[in-house]
Amino acid sequence: YAARLQRLASDAGRVAVPLPVGPVERIDPQAVAAALEQDPTLTHLALVYSETGSGICHDVPELARVAHALGRRVIVDAVSAFGALPLDLGALPAVEAVILTANKCLEGTPGAAFVVARRDSLEAAGGTAGSWSLDLADVYQLSLQPNAGPRFTPPAPTLAALAVALDLHLEEGREARLARYTANMRTLYDGVKELGLTPYLPPALQGPIVVNVRAPDAPTWNLQLFVDALKRRGYVLSNFYNTEQPSFRVGCIGAFGPGQMQQAVDAMGGALRDIGINRETAGNGGFFPLPLTA
Ligand SMILES: *Cc1c(COP(=O)(O)O)cnc(C)c1O
Image (tube, rainbow, N blue to C red; front, side):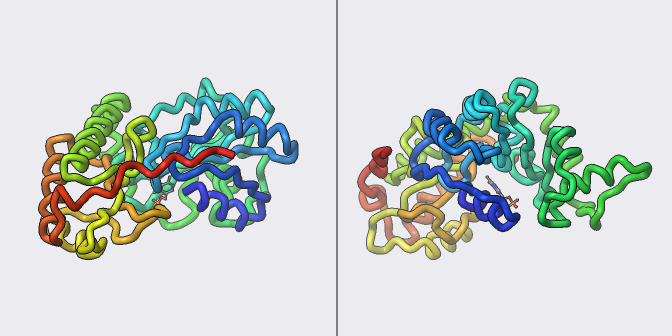
């Protein structure tokens, strides 16, 4: 998603300067500080809080403090973090905008995205979006009009579902939700190891939102056959790889707890057996080696 963020910024006419971070590395605050110090033309630090591609959660508060100390502003893709991971904007004045959607940790349905932004930034940004549909300064100005409504046809079913989802979130509380996702993650992480599979991330890097699992080395392994077998057992996974070395992604978020996650793990074991893979053949030789930082 960091690569996608860079693409979106470039397409919107911004000069996006990537800071390469390995797929099994957490963003190093010192590397960010050095990059910002080296290039005074960099106005913003944009980053993904929970990198859904890998399962790593970056230290947004610390990175925002680094940016703040150097007088830069921060844009956070918190899509798969918001509602579960902490984000105290009152304590992070450098954070200018946070992007979230209805359908991840808020447990609503897809179809609506939101940005929490500082009013002074919205007021200063008029006419610079490079896109009408994503011109948030314009959307903000419109919202100040009497009887303001959305500029485009609103996804009414999504918004109705979100109203219910927000009530449930309020009832559960963010910290309890994070604890539930963390328990789901542990059940999944330990469960796939029990099946003989290898998680993509070492425990110290594993976030609570999504677990990537390395594809087995077994000759009969085939992602599509596994996905089909799992679907017959009532569970759905993506049928594409999104890491350089093949791994499949399993989400820990949604309206369920560790007991149901264990059922999903059992179904994965069954699906592996269906395609001729057992505990002895499911492994793939330990974690990826952690890349050396240059
Ligand atoms: C899911 C996700 C997105 C995209 O959200 P959609 O609802 O698929 O548009 C963006 N960033 C991150 C980190 C995500 O997890």
